[in-house]
Image 1 (spheres, rainbow, N blue to C red):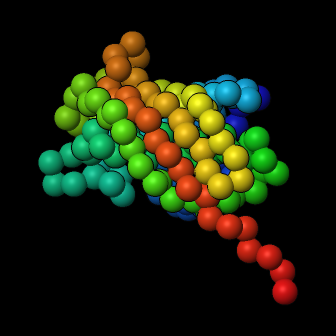
Image 2 (cartoon, rainbow, N blue to C red; image 1 turned 45 degrees about the vertical axis):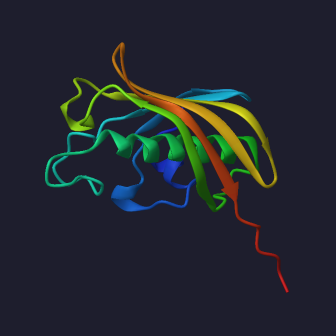
Amino acid sequence: MRLDHAAIAARIPHAGAMCLLHEVLAWDAQQIRARAVNHRDPGHPLRGTGGLPVTAGIEYAAQAMAVHGSLLGDGRPRAGRLASVRGVQARTRWLDQADGDLTITAQRLSGDAAGMVYDFQLHAGARLLLQGRASIALLPTPTSP
């Protein structure tokens, strides 16, 4: 099942320009593959004076993970925090210099009500730009009084 930008925005706690993903291309219980097209936008919210650093790709991956968690759960946004990133390997310095759209893949390695761990990769075409592993700590769901 594909999701467009509006469906993604309804599933994550990011709004406006900070909702970075353009669409979900495919997903199943173990992984998600998404596409982003805004990395060359001069108004990108994570862009610095030199351009959009490759480390911004971690936020793209984290949003893909958030969408995946929502798809596996009840569909509502759930607040979480990036607890750690490990084994990050960057193969470029700037995302805005990449040719073509970005493809973000996140593969779930483990997860429960408290958090999840994913391996992630960002590509532009066949070119690997960034990869690593991220741990997400989910915040407790507020309860009604």
